[in-house]
Length: 567
Image 1: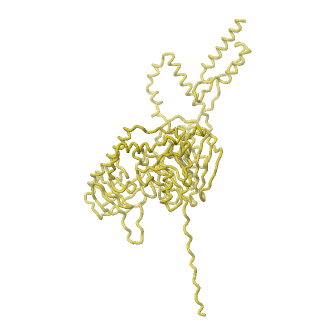
Image 2 (image 1 turned 180 degrees about the vertical axis):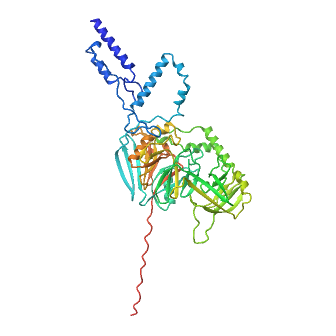
Image 3 (image 1 turned 90 degrees about the vertical axis):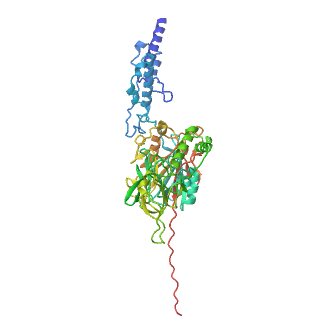
């Protein structure tokens, strides 16, 4: 009897050892990444309670796993692909490393330098994030204007989404508004909404945050155009751009914004607009920079720190994805570098330009525009602080001043800004973002191509903002995704989920904007996207607004006066 019990215990122990030792013998826990016993193995253990090891049949300890098919542009799996293999591979790798270390072979493992280098984060894109269902579960729809609707929806994956769809062929149009109408201005989206509603002739019905922006400098990242006026020309990596045309339609391309000054048959490229970085060439300043160049701002270190920290998400916003910026030494160093960059302009030779008056006094002065050659007259040539004329420019000549030694007041120059490659339509507004989420109806975020490899940015469950259009480009789709909230039981989205969600909303082309604490959507003056229990308090560089165009007044019918009959 004792021998029989001993044999049963030995067999049971053997089963346990086999179940744990066989590679791929079970799945891996998604949370702990620890191997689990296979279902067949557990059944075999139960059967062994009644039968001896010698009489038990063969034990299967493997679970079939469907293969993962990689896609182009970062290798992100589609919604139908299983994510179990990724977890199993990770668990198996950890287990092998542990066994090697236990056998005293870890020192030999460190000798494989090239292999470790290939696995570094800098050399490989982030691992494909797990995809959840983002299909709409409950939807509330509100009509904002003719052809413009707002939808609040909670998806089956636990996301809160805000979606605005605007038929651009109707009475809706898209506009970009710069915070405080300044190159380095920052405002909440709700404040930009109110400012736009007061400045624009049309009625603003919706707005979202748009461009990424540089901390401390507070300037937008990437080429930026607002109503034909250039705010920033410098591109960033291979980021995408949203182009808004004069006819109301929009498009998505990777473009560059170039400027050229023409004087006496000489063409000189514009190195930058509204900021001199490392360029020693021509820099153009317009009204978005301020009243004069340089401005001569003098702020204390404590004031700079307070301003930068105020641009972070407030603690009561509930956005747990944001890391507050507390590197005060770095803040001060960045600000002083920016101030030194501005002070460099003081001794440089500058020319002030204003638009030439039309020959016919009845015609208005043409506003600045992209793609058209602007004819300007020199009104001042000086160093030091030079005032920026209305609707005009100040060109800081830098080291190119030697080519303009004979320029004087009254001379005529030409200035042109062009989008390259040249679009088929005239560009009215332009904003830059990253990455391209949807191209020709395919949800495939191009973060690797555009140079964005941060794991948190790609895979993090963050608040998100995105813009897209339908196949013919005449219907706009604006989306804001709330950040995660433990109290509400909601989560944010990664870039792959956001791309799939945009396709489900009908987007044929789509692009990602700044997110996290910057995500904000305003409907009829009310902030509807909430980061936690309260609306986000972060200020942003610019906003994308949807306006309802006022119909032109109907022509008055001439009423013929009754002619006298002579009676």
